[in-house]
Image (cartoon, rainbow, N blue to C red; front, side, top):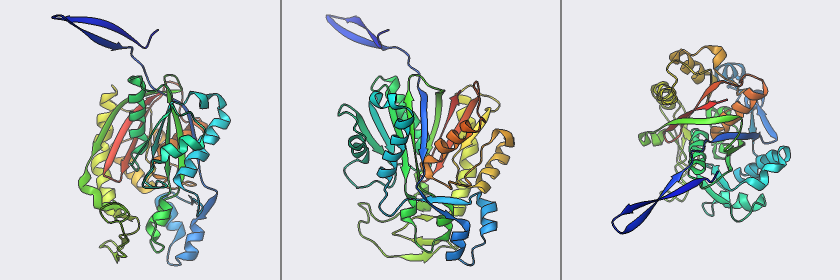
Length: 355
């Protein structure tokens, strides 16, 4: 069937064409992730921070290991690596890609766009559309919404959604809080008109008033040069303007205030008035997720928590967790899975996937 039909509407002496697009659903077709080779264990960190209790932090965060990109390995490099890994498993899909979406907050350059570099390095044709978008932990959910929009408006047929982040390059060397929580990683998701999971409706939100609670202050147009400001905030966290700063308690409170209602809105938009079959939320840390689960009244067996060997990989945590849950046979045909990302911005979004 033709993707659209054209009818003529008569208005006076002018015929106005009306384009009626055929309904098109969007699906996740393929999913893959990549983690850098270098790993840093809790014991490694305890060697650097002798006062750091590795056992206690592991119990609270749920993290034993985190992956760090090599000195000369960038988010763009990791994006290429994960796409090549996906194409090696599914060689037929490479020729079908007609749009690249890259979510990253650690681009190789201020310009040009990293997605353009990825198109060239992957050897994709010049007819491929490509763009970056700057989001953190909500990035994969927002990316699905953009990919679905491209499909449903017939701009693209097979979208390559990539999330890739190297937050570890933004750490102050004495900031043991962020060093223990975050790891680097990348994920590639092919969104098409057929696949294993239909992409449902979205609930999205923004609260830019929280900008200062998770931030790298310098390096953009506002403060181009290093400020060399290093202090300690009221909670004992390193506040360094040239590095990543996170106000942990503020982020925690934002999450508890925002995510329960976000999940309710998402479920209602998708016709779920009780509970989803399974939940895969942004893997921020175990304590935060356990608290969210209890507040929302979600049973443990419906709620995924596993960042032991990956840590918080920002925009890639949900696709990594989803891939692992599928490999463990925790998600089954017929399940409706609620996903949600939330964090820097503040930005938050949720979506239901129908398996």
